[in-house]
Each structure stands twice: as structure tokens, then as C-alpha cells.
Length: 575
Image (cartoon, rainbow, N blue to C red; front, side):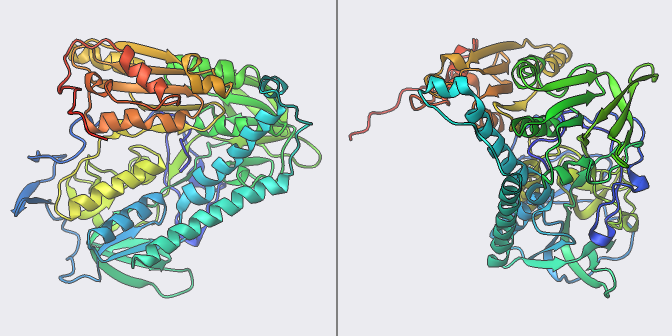
């Protein structure tokens, strides 16, 4: 999974094949109709334990006591008989970031755990997403700094013309992915997690088979099973991917060449990050966006500022309100040809000829071949249906006992760290503690220069909710121009925005654009997760001079009517 996906509104996805350990972008599974929006899961209740459990979906749920712990069970699905004894306490299908996080927490909880992986440990994030993309973005950040004569002159520095070695940059990304993949593998082996190689398929209740093509399958059983198979790049119909001149993010991360002119289809997180990389390395970029504005998933005010800084001054142009209905790779001396169609009228609008095209239209769940039909589960646009506790729901709306799905495969929030958090939450449940994750407390980030980060609702989302529920919304803002550390770094371009309820101090959303925004957002996300109100967090002390004071000033500037829940005064401590 990428550091932050294509946008906060995800495109329609479909199921893609899971056999043969290869992703074929030419597969008919990629031939989809027009995209539809998929909202984030809006869980805004307690982020930790619950004292009671209500009926969810149509499954019959009960709570059984064992001391002070709670164990969740549901109506059994009449598809076969589960085994009476098990090979493992927990089997996880998929060894990406989500599966890895779940496995480590399971071992910590004393569960005998196995993880099944048909490709390589680390999944999309480590091998084709978050990790190698950050390596490329680290290069682009340094190139931008060295190329900015004005920026260097402000420090009193003189730098000769900056250059780069393409293969060296590519090797940096590949070496980082290899190192992190090795670290993940070793961490699981050291803790006693069994890594089973092969494609995992559910053959019945609490039973999984796995194996490689051409070899006999192995059957293993577990008390609980977690699906964590992730996603692959989504390629709309009409686009021919050759992996050379028409590419997905999987290919782009290898940086096999740097085109003079590249079109990027989609202006969400993936597209923005690659535009940062390519323009820093000398490419001209053209965005093709189906909606009427760039960066449609961001808070509108942050998006407008980001466009002014990240798009307008750079060698980037864009077409909005259009579909790339047909893209033909370069061949026989001809360039890549892109046919554009008006998104509203569906009439042909323009034709572009470029050196390369990057398809950044989101991700599709990697769930076909899981054997879900064996337990009466039907996917929804490829996503495995789950309830708010990641428990899989069958075709009749009932919970499938002892089966969970986390990460991109369930579509709730397609971020690597969200998958890991969901996996940890599931392990808490299977070890006797009811736990429900608050997805609105999970941050997202786009690692451009400067960075963009967010948690919770955008301002339009918050105002829509306020209108329905009858409360008031207020907004506070602070500028990086008022921050000493940002000015010392000559990086005063930036804004932090707080969306909150003035009546009770609840934080509804925080959005940051500026230096190290991805690191700064966690104070806000943790506050939301813990239920901390503004009137309390504004008493927190921040080191000076640090970028964290941007958040300090943001919370202090909010006007909350409710008093603090606790006194900020503490007993003096002798030093």
C-alpha cells in the first residue's frame, strides 16, 4: 500500500487473480466501468474497549464472560464442519504490513501463529509502495533543495549544478525495500512465526490450503483466520499497460528511465508523489483528472494551497474533468497516445502525445482465488465485506465465525498502517478483549515537498455532519510563517487547520501542509484516538523552537466554550 493512496475517495475496484504469483494488468479483471466513490468507515465511538456489545449486521452476537475478559462469537455458517483440534491458534493469509503487525501482536499474546505468503514478505508497502517510494522522494527532496539557488543563497551557500545517477537512485529504492523486507522476515522468524510459502485458499471453516503451482497443496487448520491479501494497482479499461512506456506505480518505482514528458492519470496521493519525483529529476508532467479539480480527496483549502505550491510553479500542466479513455504505448517510433473524453458529455475532447504515461487511478483488492465461495462469502466490487470489528460477513448477512479480513482487501481504509491497526485490533478480539478501531483517528500523509497530512474529517464533511446532528463547527488555523524552526529552515510556506466543536472541544479533523507535516499529524491523531479535548491538550508543553509548536499554537488558538476537564496545575517536583 502506498503511503497514502490515490485519494480519500477511492475508485471502484474489482477482484484480481491471486494465482501464479503474478499480477497481469492485461487481465479482463481490470476492465471496469466508471469509478464510484467509497467512503471511509465512519467509526466515531470509543477507540478502545466496550462494556457492552450490540447486534451487528444480521449475525447473532453474544458475549461470554471469562473473568473480566469478553469473547465474541457469532452464528455458525453451515458450510462444513470445523476441526476439533487445530494446527495453529491463528493463520494469516498475506504477509504485508497488516499481516506482519497482526502476527507480531499474536505472538505477544501467546498465540501459535502462521502466516501464508505467495509472493514476498512485506506486500505492496515494502516492495512496491510506501518504502521504495519514500526512497525516491528522499532523492527528489534533496534535488529540489540543491536546485533552488534562492533557497541555498538564503543560507549563504553556493552549490554547483546538481545532477543524479538514475541507476544509483533506483538502487537506493531497491536496496531499502530489500532491507526492510529482510527485517520483517527476520522479526517474524525470531518470534517463532511459521512462514508458509504459497497461495492461501480457504477450503472450509477454520481450514486453509496453500502451495505452489505444480506442487501438492498442504492443508492447515486454525482456530481463527485473518485475510490480509492487500491490493494491486487499478487500471481502467481502455488503457494498455506495457510496463515500459505505459506503467503503474509498480513499474515506476523501479525508475528504469526518466521520460522528458510524462502524463499522470489521477491526481491523488500516488500521482502527486510521483509528480514530485519526476519534476525534481527533470521531467515535465501533465495531470489527467476525471473530476473538476485536482487533489479531490483533500480538504479544499489545503488542496488549493498545495496546488499553488506543488503544481503551479513546477513544470506541470493538467486537464481536469476528463477521462483517459484509451492509452496506447509507444511503439514503432510513435509516442504514447492518450485519448481524452469529457467526463460529463462523454464526447471526445483532446489527444495527447507524450513519452510515457503513469496510471495512478487507485488500487484494486487482491481477493480472487481466496476460496470465499467455500464459506458462502460474496465480495462487493472485489472487497471482502466485514463489520466494524473486521469480522467477515457472508452472503446472508451473517458473521462467519473465526474469520476476519484486514487492510486493502476490506476497503475500509486503504493505508498500510490502517491494515496493521486492524490486524492488532483483531488479535485483541480473538484473545478475549472486545476492541473496535476508530478509523477517523488514523492519519494519512502525502510525502511531497512540502508534505501534506490529515486526520479525521475535511471541513465540508464536518459541516455536513454538523447539519445532520445539530451542532456547531469552528475552524482554527496557524501558519508555518510564525514558526521559528520553519523560518530557520527557510521553509515558512505552510498551514495547519483545525476543525472542531466549540461547544465541547471535540477534534473533528486536522489538516497540515508544510515541512514535516507527516510527522506533525500524530499529536492530533492520538488526541482523537484517546478522546482528548482541545481544552485539555492546549496545556501540553512543546519544546522550543520546534515544528511541533505549529500544533501547539493551533490548539491554543481554538475558542472552546467548555472548561478543561482537569486542572493544568501540578505539584512542584524538587530537582
